[in-house]
Length: 329
Image (cartoon, rainbow, N blue to C red; front, side):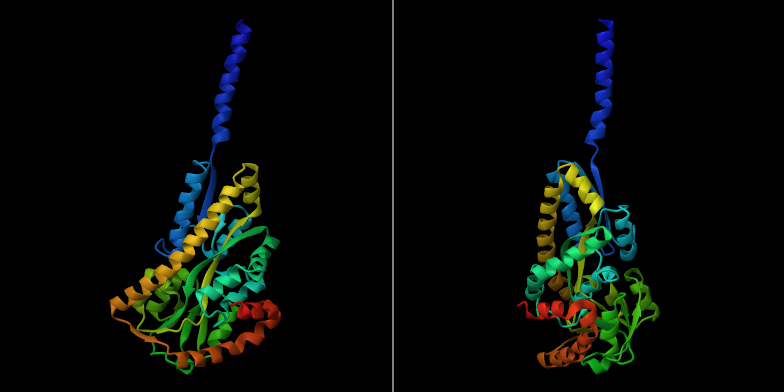
């Protein structure tokens, strides 16, 4: 009897040790470089809410905005090592091993957000998303920021020729380098976290940004002129790694994870469109920056000038991808 009691005691004690271990939540670290108030920042928080609620706490997500954990380039490397489980870098951070993603940096490739999304959701867009798998990553979705405007401290920019000699900050991107060179400007690569101080100190004269970045990072405080050109698009790839996906599948949580990502993506796209207009109006309300909205005729000149760079990237990106993007309407 005493032996039986001892065995039962040991079994209960063992179960108390095992259950907490089994119940330990799966931790997800999501690193990004933008402010919480941006579409990406808000969508990251929304995804956290969805995952934690739908899994009853089996997944716990920590969000690190404003490059507080990693810059975008470091985040991709951290993701490969499973030091983090989610990142959403700009496309340029993947182009070293997925050159097709340079397609999204091409100026005047998409006429509208609808045109853009139609391509992203097509078989061509899905094909590009899968290409990151070669490095142990899993492309989950495309997230929007928006179409870009030009700002600078030198002079009003009405036509491409007005940009001659002006030094613009760019992300590390061969396409963006050529885009600015073709209008006579000087491209200068800088991390996003350094842009405000670089503009303030005159390291660069200007930059290109969607409205949400321009407003939330307060670039309007250190810029005099702005051109509403919408010449190019800035977007991101939401990405995880294969190690993490295997862990989710083993726990039976992969479906709820992917469903939540899909819903967060729809939310992010809708929010990006809403905030684009909101932040545009906030910049106008600020009243201390001279804004020029390109006319249809001016836009034709911009388009004709910048699209001259396309042939340089036919072999790198693949002309078939570029043609597919242009023709997906």
